[in-house]
Length: 322
Image 1 (cartoon, one colour):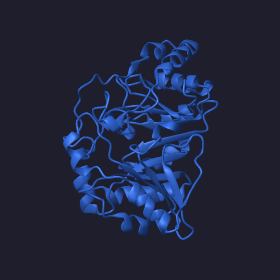
Image 2 (cartoon, rainbow, N blue to C red):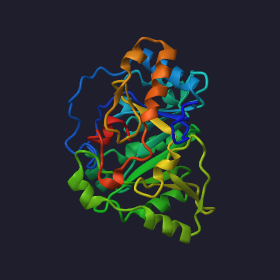
Image 3 (cartoon, rainbow, N blue to C red):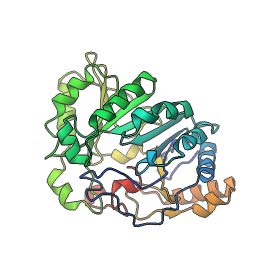
């Protein structure tokens, strides 16, 4: 089992397969994707090796991320490679959802078990303003199909003071009859969004206080779960989650590591830099890769230091898919 010096165990790998994204979200890529690195992304063979090495070290969940992972034509093969790896019980994906109606069936057939979709507003005009694309209806149609197919669906909404802070009631009405989990995520500062962060950051604590006052009950987290505090209510088919990275002891339950699309290990979303392990991935020697992972894990810090305004090497969230 991969374990750091603070006793945290890592059951969960977030694996980026591209840093390209076709959306231009205000908080991430307001000017659209800029190709500022070599696009020598991990091959299917390398992805298969990574999945096997991590599974043998106790990882049971892999989340496929981007950029936007559906931009890779071999995405079904990537999902299948992860799903067919002994020891991997959950294959998840984070997507902007624009390809959902046309491709969700093939992804589920390949072995996808859950999916996170970004929807920062249920108002079509505001959605288009935030993302640069008038695709909300298409994405909602795809979500309905995903639910029909029986996979776990979560929707991510980044809290932004001047964009969607007043939409809680709209989201709650949606959850009355929609069996998914909506997660509100506090806006995080990255290397290139300082002004936007200062204008739009808002805490999720008032929402948590309101949910508790309205009878929502907190759910116990699974060992492979992400960092959200999740709540349920008997009058709602859906659930609500809150991801509050600026809250006390947020990092105490960290259970995930990240590998970028270029084969770099990130011990934290806000690490000083990615640690290049591509040579250990490419040579196919599982033991060497596992030994390197265990060694590098010794440098993982106790916290992300976001409270101090530290953003590490993370210029924008599309670099690692959050």
